[in-house]
Amino acid sequence: MIEIKGLKKSFGNNVVLQGVDITIRDGETLAIIGASGCGKSVLLKNILGLMKPDHGTVRVDDLLINTATQRELERLRVRMGFLFQNAALFDSMTVEENVTLGLREHETRIERSRGSANQQPKARSQTELKNLAKEKLNLVELWNKEESKPDALSGGQRKRVGLARALMMDPAYMFYDEPTTGLDPVLSDQIDALIQSLTQKLNVTSIIVTHDMFTVERIAERVIYLVKGLVYFDGTPDQLKRSEDSEVKKFLHRYSVSDH
Amino acid sequence: MLAWTGFRVRRFLAEFGAISRLLYRTFTYTGATFKNRSLLVKQMYFIGTGSVPLVLMIGFFTGMVSALQAAYLFKGLIPNSFVGSAVSRAIFVELGPVLTAIVVAGRVGASMAAEIGTMKVTEQIDALESLGINPIRFLSAPRFFAAVLMMPILVIFADCIALVGSYVVSNFFLGLSAKVFFDSVQRLFDVKDVLLGLLKALVFGGTTALLGVYVGFATDGGAEGVGKATVRAFVLSSAMVLVMDFVIWTVISKA
Image (cartoon, rainbow over all chains, first blue to last red; front, side, top):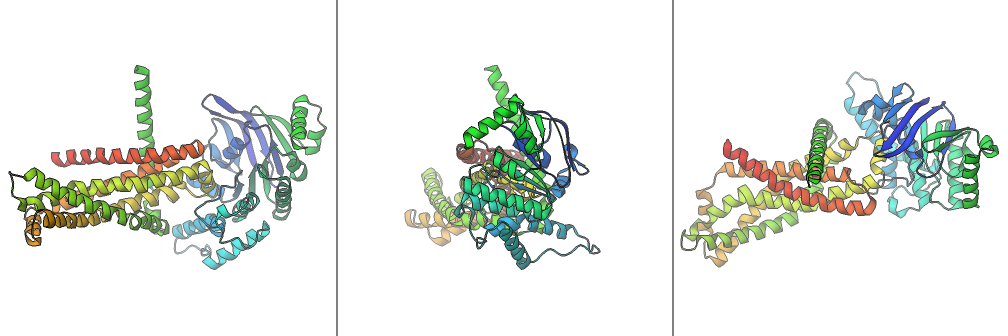
């Protein structure tokens, strides 16, 4: 479970989050929407501990992110998958190396710190890692691209590799930062379908930051609408669509004007 | 003017603190870097093997120019048979380590800043952290230790080729035979000079890598920011090599 209480975050004079309270239950699929610059991505990065809150608390399972040590955060992140807005693939590595890096480093670290009496399984061999990478790449419907470099991939393929990389360690939490931004409608649909099928297949807690209402309607069970760094609306996608609130209507209208 | 000076001093202190913190955190991963050597070896290859041709060329010409300059300064005062002694000591203690470090600052320091800077602005550093990989362990430590290990080796290469260069010039332009030149080298040879040069190389290597990595991590502002970071890393590293050279000389002369 993720519990956020009174979260505030500023950058200089720019106040991005002004006191956010959200509780995300295990297995839930939550979409966080809002205009650009309303603090959606900052909220995600606070949950992952990539940023520390100025005020308030962020707790993931039993770990308080505010005071967690680097080691504790590293251990927590092994149970989290993050799909970045631009996929953030490592350009110097092949697709396969990108996908296996997290697991390889994690297992090497465990093996290094393991005592002789420890019963933990040995780190996977190169072949096992290769096969696992292939399995995850097939799961995101990407075939025969293991040896390609990221710059040889299309936008949609990069997102798929990013998704496969995030799924490599079988995370309990999946975070998607604007998964369909910058993609054409056909690719956006494919990525939405992929996220939906993964969410159902893997039974993970999913948090999707987006301003794409198609994604929200198709995938989310619950929507949070952020306005000026505060939770303005918290409900189901259906409740959001039927809301008579002028601020919500303004956002949905803007979306409908820009996307249709 | 006062406010501007205050701002610059505050900024300098903040950056000095951040660089010291990066150095400390890099040292905390010493064991991890040497246990899992693949990243270290990759960087050693890039810094060491990749820099050899450039270092050899710079070393050769430095040796040649040093010999000509020594002969020019000695004219009418000291016989040319002392060129070997003077040039070799200057190469071992000063020219070898400093010029090699400046070449490496241009090639390696700037490239580290560009690579890590690009990773920073394209969220690849965040992606590393999201995978539970510490960027200091993964990026900073292998580069720092590889530079510290490889710089003395590069300096040995530079010293040797510079001696060859100064012999070539001494032979062709000053008419010194190999025996006269190398006897002269041997006459004032002191192993402490070589060790001092290698100590400097070690410090310069660490300084160059640390600044390259620091500037990379501090990059922002997209492609323009990466360009600025590359130039900044080269300027900072080169300047710091000269500052550290002075510091080492000061410490040695007091000891």
